[in-house]
Image (tube, rainbow, N blue to C red; front, side):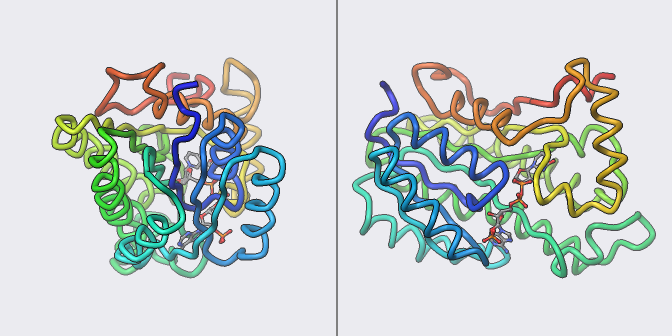
Length: 258
Ligand SMILES: NC(=O)c1ccc[n+]([C@@H]2O[C@H](COP(=O)([O-])OP(=O)(O)OC[C@H]3O[C@@H](n4cnc5c(N)ncnc54)[C@H](OP(=O)(O)O)[C@@H]3O)[C@@H](O)[C@H]2O)c1
């Protein structure tokens, strides 16, 4: 009940983990403002489905996290469409050409690819969270969550660029948590083990990763997008996590320790 009538802003909710988070909030009566990059048609379909089946407001906006300052304009549009902002989830991730030189073995890493990943992961989090926090202050608080990944705890082939930026965003989360706490704004991260999404299917060694996770996890299966959605929702719901801030919750099916 504590979430009903609130508003979530989330990046990259056309598929995968973002989409699962979006539906988790909508099912609990939260209005949703979400972004897409290329898949406008899919975003429109999702917004219509949510408004029809979950009786909350749902609006989609275009965003490129390689241009983090786009968040400033985006939040102005959110202001026009929604009364308040209570939760912000920085979820979108880049792939394809923009990660060339960033998603590679160490000796093939290039500054441009690494910088792109840093921009999309850390700088997008910073600008999005700043804009969200300005609105949260007006309603007496809120919750911010960044997605992270266990690729900063265990080795994953080609993952140095992402792993480093996930480390950096987890550190940024802690600084944001300290500076925003006095306004009732909590800031945390959810770090996922390998989750079956398009992003992971794009890895050249996807089949081996899947087999290894199924073998390694005490739960004997790969993670699903909904496995992370619950943790994100928990971190945003003050009834469940009011004194939890500056943390990273690892949701990895037990794979990191084994
Ligand atoms: N999959 C995993 O194993 C795993 C594990 C742990 C953590 N995570 C983290 O969870 C988050 C979501 O990952 P996922 O696997 O769900 O990804 P995904 O299924 O590939 O979805 C990526 C999302 O990001 C959007 N996007 C792509 N390029 C963008 C850009 N330049 N600007 C703005 N948005 C853009 C996409 O929008 P369009 O569809 O419109 O292009 C899509 O909504 C990421 O932060 C990732 O690091 C993933």
